[in-house]
Amino acid sequence: MKAQDKAAIVTGGGSGLGAATARRLAAEGAKVALLDVNLDQAEKVAAEIGGIAIACDVSSADAAQAAVTQAADAHGDARILVNCAGIAPASRVVGREAPHDLDLFRKVIEVNLVGSFNMLRLVADRAAKLDPLEDGERAIIVSTASVAAFDGQIGQAAYSASKGGVHAMALPIARELARFGIRVNTIAPGIFGTPMVKAMPQEVQDSLAASIPFPSRLGTPEEYASLVMHMVENVMLNGETVRLDGAIRMAP
Ligand code: NAD
Image (cartoon, rainbow, N blue to C red; front, top):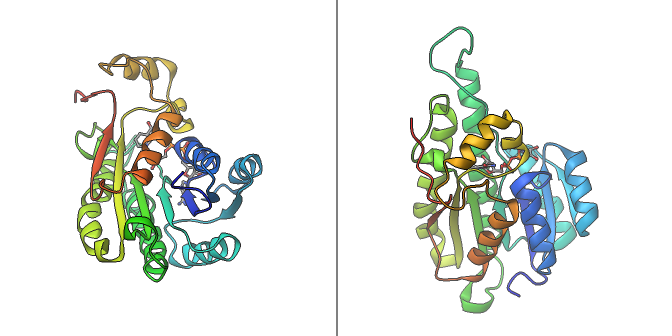
């Protein structure tokens, strides 16, 4: 029961992997704050699990600062942060029909990479001042990359770059924060059955599922949340990116 009574923040908590993580952390006894740009969705999940929902664009320094303060006022400083907020718009480098303009590239980097860093730094800064708990630990941070960080598909330049950054920053930050007893890990999901993926045509979902060697189905948000819990519980796991993908390796 490592999460029992701990304050937890889950970004993107209103949907998909974040919602499942919020539910699991609450079931493990954590006091959960769900941060999301979509407040309605976050409020629904919060009401279900007895948590709180806070409207927040994680890429905004001011909004994230205010949200972390609001969460701390309600629950105490967070000892668990799970970064799930993310967007995955298709992007192209050339072609008028799907112009990949610079603004879109910047937006994806801002939300997925800068947003994760922004939340991480705010939570870590407060956690570093807390009393250490068991094993000298003060906090655990889990961010969400993607297998697209390693083998991105056509149309995923911005998304892959953002997720590659989430993966790459974890180890240096884990090393920096080690002396405070703050761990940083990353999950790189394959293909999960969330609204982000369910928005794709059914035949695309079916072919993605079939391309997963085993099990040949989409991952469930609960399977993602289960790995988050393992990362919370296993103090030896630090600075690591774990692929959770059924051994999928994407063809170009
Ligand atoms: P989702 O679309 O179901 O949920 C994402 C949530 O993030 C939404 O509630 C959305 O409102 C919120 N959000 C978006 N921009 C935000 C912002 N700027 N600030 C705060 N909240 C914001 O997606 P999901 O599938 O649950 O994805 C969760 C994370 O997992 C994302 O980072 C995604 O890139 C990553 N991921 C998902 C898959 C998958 O197969 N579903 C695979 C690899 C990685």
